[in-house]
Image (cartoon, rainbow, N blue to C red; front, top):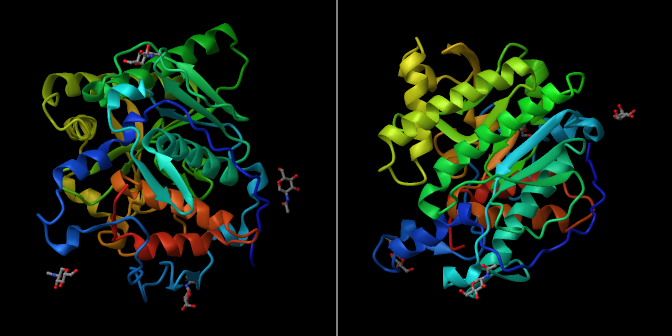
Length: 385
Ligand SMILES: *[C@@H]1O[C@H](CO)[C@@H](O)[C@H](O)[C@H]1NC(C)=O
Ligand SMILES: *[C@@H]1O[C@H](CO)[C@@H](O)[C@H](O)[C@H]1NC(C)=O
Ligand SMILES: *[C@@H]1O[C@H](CO)[C@@H](O)[C@H](O)[C@H]1NC(C)=O
Ligand SMILES: *[C@@H]1O[C@H](CO)[C@@H](O)[C@H](O)[C@H]1NC(C)=O
């Protein structure tokens, strides 16, 4: 069965801001002067399709070109109109005076639209919100940001929430954990003021993810966790910080807060010299390993598992489903599971995020599974972005 969505035209916000969390591609550009590498690192400013990984594997999406032969679970059965009830997505997004950035006037074409860096970053944020509101229309989204930045963002069910802090580039990952903690503290205070009020379940994510299924279902499917993290079979970085779920109960929030406080402490004391994109992930892995009884091999598994980490019941969810990343998804995960819920467009793959949304929009009756085939078959391409 084919599911058609009514597409509301989405507004393109153009403003003098700079989206810092997405500077990685810029760095890659600097560090990768043309010609100094083999062709495998060649970067493209358009989609380049290759074979879709996972061909012939059961329970993996099968594609013929950009046509999906299997419908993923969401497009086959779900009633998405009540998706996301009681869930709040929370992301840290900060803006800077673009004249400081220097190269902000450079523009790129994505599809038929030309963006300068600032507009492109805002478009990633808006695309992040578009996917959430499409798949989980009852959810809310909260953008934690620097009080000195005024985000030009006015959308239904989206709130901008300023949190005082140090948002400079090299401190951003550290600040992000601080902002998460501050938000949890604020939620607890709010709950003390209005004890009867329901607290939403919280999902902290990077803003370069596309929600492609009702990820809020984890809270009812797995009843016993306070905090959920995503794991993958990667020795150096088994845990990804791009997706952290917290149960919206007083207990869940208290335990999530102490977990993050410990992560913050380990980060500040041990990993400040790590590359600014990695410190938080190394710190999370370090905290988990220092308390957990399982060995590293457990991260080679495919199934979710529950562990007690210093009093918090932590659910470990496989990245393959809850944090699927091209090109890892094309390699390490061997294709795309049919029940994939979150696609994470790290680094220069943000171009693919925008292209995917454009693809879905380009017809009133596009199938989400076809879009996932597009992601899967171009997931090995490195993009200029
Ligand atoms: C790299 O690309 C050039 C032309 O685009 C081609 O002639 C050459 O064979 C390629 N090299 C490798 C190692 O693929
Ligand atoms: C997916 O589609 C392929 C090709 O049509 C089919 O062989 C396979 O059984 C399907 N997988 C599932 C789980 O439905
Ligand atoms: C889908 O969910 C909405 C909201 O909960 C409900 O009103 C509607 O009846 C449901 N539709 C189907 C087909 O289950
Ligand atoms: C942005 O930078 C310009 C030039 O440095 C300066 O004139 C302007 O006041 C700054 N704006 C803000 C909001 O900080």
